[in-house]
Image (cartoon, rainbow, N blue to C red; front, side, top):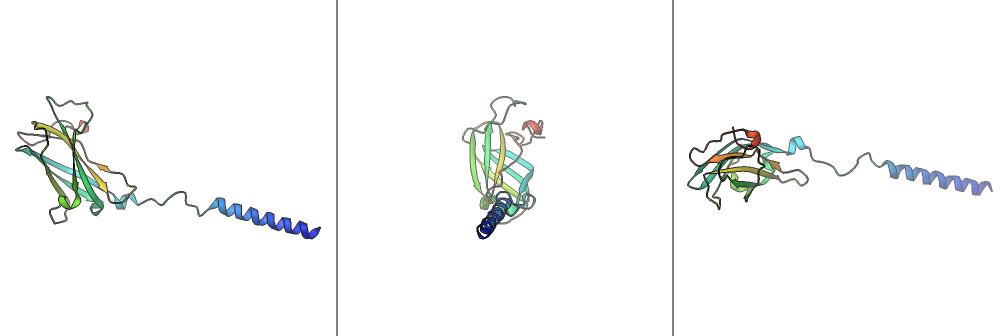
Length: 163
């Protein structure tokens, strides 16, 4: 009887220990996450011109610029006056591979050119950068406005109307 009791206690002890180790794990919950500070990039210092129906955009990229896989240019033609509270609704999109943006030399500024399908005097636009590391969110630039005659931005940036 003592041998049976000892065997049951041993099995109970082994079961409790294995359940404890199975539940506790290694302390990590979920897949490892990338270091956002080190692996992310951002856009700033935008400039755009609209000449001859072609939008030319240049901006500064900072952070982990080597992680930029591609950029999508989103375009919304402005028909009439700019609407201060209207949401940005991209009508056209153009994909630019990162190799197209630096013209062979890696620097802090990228540039791209695009001729929209619909000719207008002004457009609202933004660029969206895709990170080469999966799991990191796309980086959306500010919504800006470019006008045909002057190429300058006017209005309030929080509404996508430039500075």
